[in-house]
Length: 156
Image (cartoon, rainbow, N blue to C red):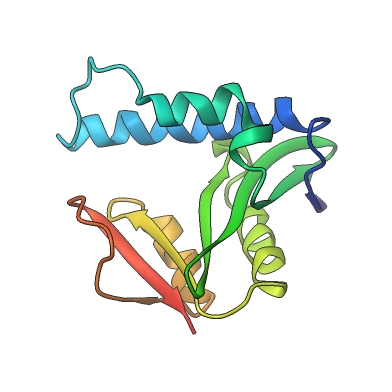
């Protein structure tokens, strides 16, 4: 199994980014509902539906990477900046592709060109993701986000 990482080319890759980010956001909202953080019957917030409907515009100021295995796009990650830090967001690998190094390949590619410090956040119940981040050298830092259950990490 060979993992290929590419920087997306909008608008050509908009459909793939939309699908992957949509999977990420739907799964995240379902998990937040399971943990009692959102109403399970509530509609997805508009800021999230915009990411699915128009990734070309929403991610215009970020570098978006996509991972493919055997020609099938199966992972996404967005790299942007937040003040003096680089920020990683929307990091998602499809369940079928997990455990094959796709997430590590995406993260390695993102970090290769990232200005330090690099920041990201992850829900505390996402232990496999936390393991990947810790293995890459990220450390838990005081939260910059007040949502309960969110772990903030930084790589210096």
